[in-house]
Length: 92
Image (cartoon, rainbow, N blue to C red; front, side):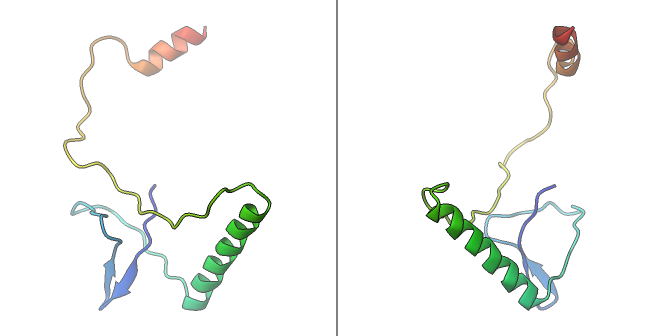
C-alpha cells in the first residue's frame, strides 16, 4: 500500500504533482479534521526537531512524493525454477 497526501477541491481529490493513478485504481479516502491534521503535522515536526537536536538526524528534509516509474511493468518470463523455490532449496 502506498499513501499519497491529497486535498479536496470542488469535491475532487487533488493529488501531489507527479502522482498519476491509472483509471480503475481502487482508493480509500480518510478525511481528517483540519485541527487534527495540523496537530499531527506539528507532532511530526517536533519529533524530527528532537531527533535533529540529539544528533540522530543530520538534516530535516521536506517530504518528497512517492512516484512510480513510467513504462511497461509487465513481469518478465525467466527460464528455470521460481526464485522462491530456489531460496527454499538453498536454505535446506
